[in-house]
Length: 595
Image 1 (cartoon, rainbow, N blue to C red):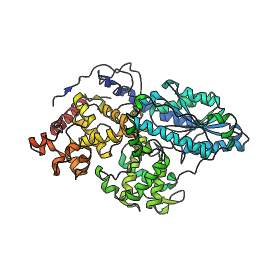
Image 2: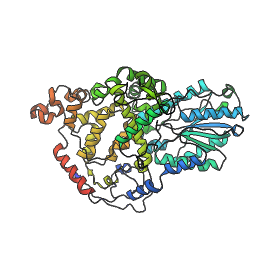
Image 3: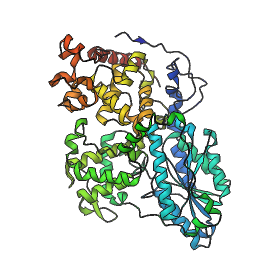
Image 4: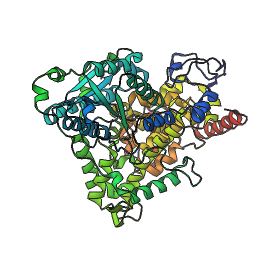
């Protein structure tokens, strides 16, 4: 236990407000090393102000209501077709599909309404690409490539099937993003803009700004909830306040979907443009917009790596649906039994498709209902067979366990809206921001490389470095080891995951890295969840010849001579000592914390 404790210094006063890792300096926990950028954030006092009185979701909702846009994705502009010119769907990084895309479908309906009213407009689509955003958010090369290849597929599908052009707009500077969209709207005679809501603070503020900007140009912005089945903030406690605990939220979510089974109904294909749009006039030049280039820092290290990861994670809606059906046909029935065993490979591996929106959650749940009898007897309030995804439902424990993971995803978006500081590089429990973290650069390096001397942790880190993915059980264990056993600032690990995962998602990632008093024991966790040691042996080749339970803790279960021959590192810290240090540090630093 030789790591040096870091001293806090500085003041949060006068700090520029940012919701990204590149926020302004000044917080007492800021580091002097080059890794500082991942730790910067507003003060906890400022975070509480935003949560309580300046929640951007509240402001956006008020603007939507003011502009006659309802939160239930029911868009009807009351026979104003004569006012409709061209209609734009603005793709975001979380809705990269044509199928069951709420805003895209509504935009197509609006464009058709314009034709019926004599407006003669057509449907256009754009995607705003910001290289600086990729750096700002720490987007991994795998996720960057996955999204752009998915966009290429969407562009081809829109052009071939719907005669709709998808234009890539590039903002070289982050501050130019809305300007580029406004230019496109002006240059292409757009009267209506449709988009799906993103729930992070920066993105909510962007849409608030767009409402005001477009108002001044006589253009209507229509936003839809598309990422979730049950809209964030919709489920409340008996007292009317927002739910903040998962178990009652899960129960309420199941009841809501059972009562309104149409929540998981999917939409038909959007209406196509006339073929003439593709062959002549001003819109012809919009087709064939070239894919944006990838910054050098976001490119794969080699063609071998690119080909390997593209094979592991084939982009696009069709590939995602195939993976979904394979999971439902072959794995979901045993999911509740095997989901925590990484060697069983019983996970759906749908996370990358959900995080990019290549497959909608509604599609996943609707397929579950159809293939696994998710419908119960009786009917919901608004008609149709009720949906029962509970433990006692027709899908059984496997379906219930898998749907529960989807509900976690919904809950995380709900919490992002309830407590927007969650997306501002701060812990949900603001008292954890007062913990003084360790300056253990050797421990950090070993964690990144999968050489901590704890086999279960090292296996997880080697998996993420090779596959751009990590089993959820290992995400919990590796994050616990870094932030509790090593007492290294959890934000550094959170950023590392962003820079390596193909399925990175801010809502999921921040909640997964939320500091906690729970300290996972990597040895007992491995014995319980990888009982045969197969996962460890797969990812830690130094231990493939170790037999029995020694593989879980070779340093303490083999003789010194046997261990030394492995070429595997000794534990960086003693688990028992590090756990005690963590508990004492948390108690000491948080005792009088006043966020």
